[in-house]
Image 1 (cartoon, rainbow, N blue to C red):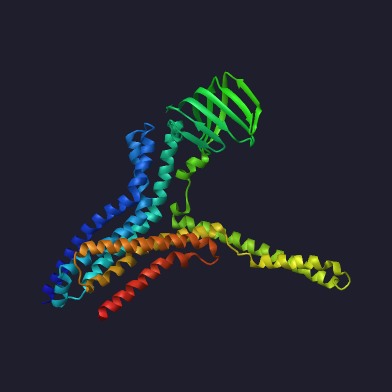
Image 2 (image 1 turned 90 degrees about the vertical axis):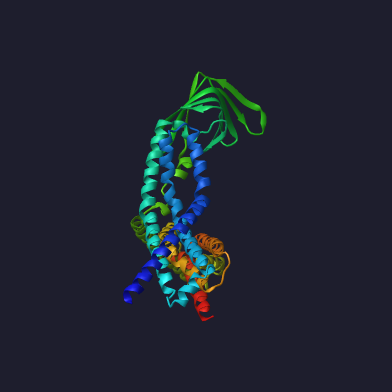
Length: 423
């Protein structure tokens, strides 16, 4: 009897596993398309237009995928669980399980274990794959910049590089044809340079500094708003230096979300020390101001003209006391550290909100489950996004804000499950 019962549970588990992974694949492709395709296609198009070899394009696109998986895996897990339970409920399979005396715990435990494994996978992506992929991405992109200096300059476009505006026609293999350059770094005095050809050379890869050599330039110096104040000159050649650090850094700079938890903990400890020093400085400043205020109050009986200075000191002390003790980077690093764990845990927590579907009579259960997962995913995304925006407005540990969406979803799941079991 025990053997038959164990065989029944094994059959049930295998059946749920097969259905779950099929739904997971469908949901994964859907969310991957939502989060990735548009961004990756735009990025790939930019690289392809520069005649970069196909292998490098594929590598760059592949190295950008871990960032997208952070959200794709949790939401796909939620959808897979919702679709499976919704489908079994609509087809009366859950009713059949209960009639056969099989506890729904047997169904839930399979999905919960799978969700836990996917949570571990999400954390591995966030803490190992993402830092590694970004490092490889930066290395590969830097190599492309060495081979193709004009990678960041588009053909037939207006390129803004710091205080310089570069209007180009054809850009190919480091050579810019028929360029017009506006230099606005001197404020009211503007310099406009035109040339038939310019050649770009990479000078410093660490700072993304380029040299632009132009042939036979025509230079117009003019003052804004003064029509008759200008100078026109010609030259055989001219050299400019272009700083692309602001443009390239958007792709290559390491953000806290792309660091490992170990690196974040190291940075957090350093910022904690900065915050302690800031607090000590604030206390010293307050003691100094209070000392001055005490001295002035003692002299007030003999000199009433000090009243204005006393009021000013009291106001300064009040402002300093109310000044929030917030270290921007400490809050930022803490938020990103807890976000790694919260996103990983969301795989496990979000599936519990789908369990009450087993107690509902549904039509088109798989479709209903998928729709429910979209609604829950959107709500979770909004709550997490809102929490991230608020971490710098408070001085307490941002972990409370980052974990709040998970806590709320777990609470809703518990309430729904408790009420459905009692009906």
